[in-house]
Length: 608
Image (cartoon, rainbow, N blue to C red; front, side):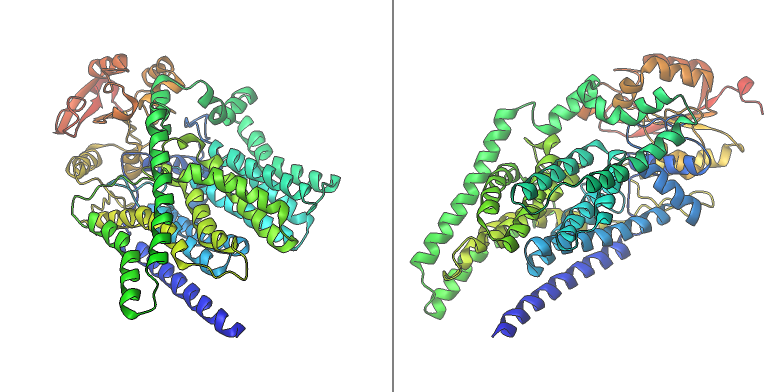
């Protein structure tokens, strides 16, 4: 009898893992040359490691307000395997596969094989291989921020080590947890604070339930591991620049949220939902009511329609399938909406935390271990979502922050809810319908949107003899390709280039240095690093070429470059440079047009 129970579960697990493998294979095969965005964010993720691999130092030679971990990891990848987009993307694909393995084993420990395989598929379709609109920077293959992706990966490593530590109490695992937490601390602040909060909860819960005790050796091992990597970076970077400047650069990502420049404050206010909290709380309440209504409706259906005949069984099945069909039909149109709502996650996770915490105190040892890990994931999820807690919409980089919460929702509703019933009581299958509907409502539109984007014609840009493939937005492709070929045909050896306000990806593709440390002049960077400081750097080291590339600052509620800010640098360019070519619409004139102008340093200053 036990075999009959095990075999169906294993078959479903294998089927789901097989589907995940197919998703991985399709993403790798169909995505070649289609990952990343040449203008927004992703160019920075290529340019900085390339510069470091050439011997330059982060912060001293290249300004950045993220931690140094990812930049130096990718720089070493370039050094070992060669400089190309394909090298980084293949390495990220390996991390993607390892993340799938970590998620499967962690969720398997906290629930079951079936639920773990569902979570792997949810991860791949939601964040791992997905994209959002025409910007292909919000997945694990071409992330807008490798720091966030590496931080998430190491966070899953730490939670997995917590499950191993419950089985094998080894001092080595404590050291590794400290080591990886130290690595996260110099990656991105969001992932560090979330992982630290999850570890603190785990420690508190295990001590309160007498699962573990604190030993001096364990504390020493943890602290030794924690300080290793940050201390090495502090020593290395302070050998290149003053130690106080090094410390300020390493801690900028932690101090910046407390005193952000106005454009960044506006941006965070909009994405977090704090600009209109009443509206966001209302949406959360509505989504929670929808879940409860679904449970109530399916309860009534199951009570009123007893599946004693084939006709009634068919009617009951139709009632279950109708919401899935309706969601699929809604997003079947070519102009289906890309906005996806996960406003149900924050209130659900808060309720789940308190329920799990109460269950931990009342359950036996074996079940308690699962519940502690599940609630550790809940704490991790809530902490990751703090920046978007009132507006958990999975667009752009919010999909990274929401990912742990969606996985926790999946494991909790599909595994824990059935286990809350008494063993002798039969579990009504209708209880699985509401969470599956909510998951389908989130995953299907995003998966279909990604498929539509990746099935569109590829704009693969290959410049000079570099083995680089990177996508270009359809509305920008003609202008970008003309810029690249014009500069390539007319530049001299060792010429330098600056793309203003944003577009460092062009430097990378043309293998042209920016002569200053300021590679991005969008409003956040301009006001964070100081406009006067940036202007002095450019006048002291003028690049041979400047490209003024149109960029809409709508998300920062700031006027265009040279109008809302940086007026002096525009005047300096017109006095010092000659305009050689313009493509597309005039830059910084209208948000409906895209264009660029290429400027070259005046001949009297351009002599070799």
